[in-house]
Amino acid sequence: MSDPDFETDHDDDDLPPLVPLPSAPMPENTTAGFVALIGIPNAGKSTLLNSLVGTKVSIVSRKVQTTRALVRGIVMEGAAQIILVDTPGIFAPKRRLDRAMVHSAWSGASDADAVCLLIDARKGVSDEVEAILAKLPDVKRPKVLILNKIDLIPRDRLLALAASLNERIAFTHTFMISALNGDGIDVLKATLAGMMPKSPWLYPEDQVSDAPIRILAAEITREKLYDRLHEELPYRSTVETDQWQVRTDGSVRIEQTIFVERESQRSIVLGKGGQTIKAIGQAARREIAEAAEQTVHLFLHVKVRENWADDPARYREMGLEFPRG
Image 1: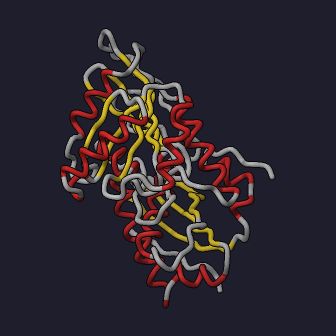
Image 2: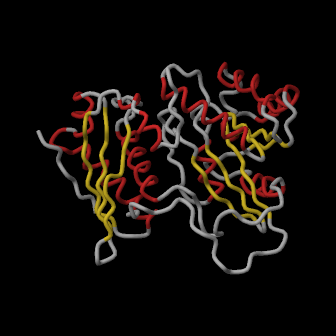
């Protein structure tokens, strides 16, 4: 059976991740720096990143461990430019891909100007959070505690949790927020801006991410894949953008491939009569078109690639270091 194509009414293959700064004069006394967001899977890091940036730059899913690479979002606050790094969730790694993601998360924390530990206040300090707290003192950077989902926990429990964590770690600041509804985001943003070192801006002020649009497009489709097949589809699946062709009318034809590890998974993604992949494609097309600000014609294919998570090339595409052994 051949792969069906579904047009669901963009990125140049060579689109660089970083655009040269414009020649317009920059404000005086500018600051710029990197802030790493760390935490366990599903703490809300991607939601927080998107809320701070003001638009989607990282996918959000109920499925854990969906952020695999370091995703950078760019926030402007006055004369400060904050480059937020949404790291993969930190958890106990069992497989090669898991090890690469956890290494990437701690590497992002060590290289940043400040580190934000995001904790789901409703769940509190789990064993996975304990493991992060044990290693956090080794990161010699200013540390910020962010308690998320505060609308889901009584205030007395929230305050007790904040006090307990501050007794254990020397946090520079503590914030209580709801990344989903925006509570506390403005104060957090202003404080992070004040922590940035003096520096020229590292990106144009209207740029929201350093990821090429073709990569974001693949991530959007992966998000819709997980949204639709949260229970049925295993975590180890991926999406790649194969072609991005700009048409004469300004629209874009995009071809993407969804890779799964077994034929049975391919059948799940396709669905009866191709209805599942059609729905995934329609949802992805709408969001990709919004991100690209162009009309999009999206064609999806599903292929079986056994053991793709052991292929070094896939790691390079995700910006991860391939763990040997």
